[in-house]
Image (cartoon, rainbow, N blue to C red; front, side):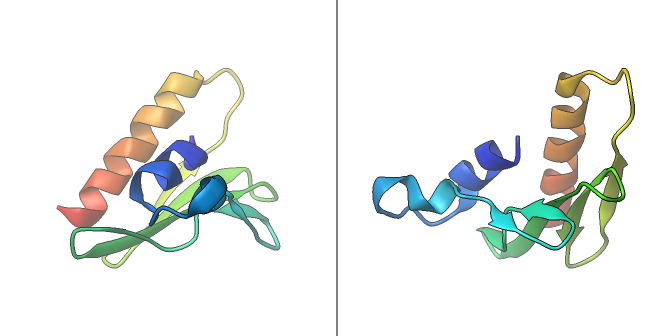
Length: 86
């Protein structure tokens, strides 16, 4: 899911280099992304079992839980990213 978001909003580079996720001390991240005049980042924190959508105004934390559908996570991530630039 993070790769799809990065593919959409990262500046394109040769041989798909722009879709590689960055490794962080707690998991991985999209790195800083831009949509219009808003910047945001999505991080998967594997230690804390959460996905964090970081934006200028407020961070949105999505807890990873057993039994939750992948489509639900996707909807929450997309909603949080849209809120970051609206």
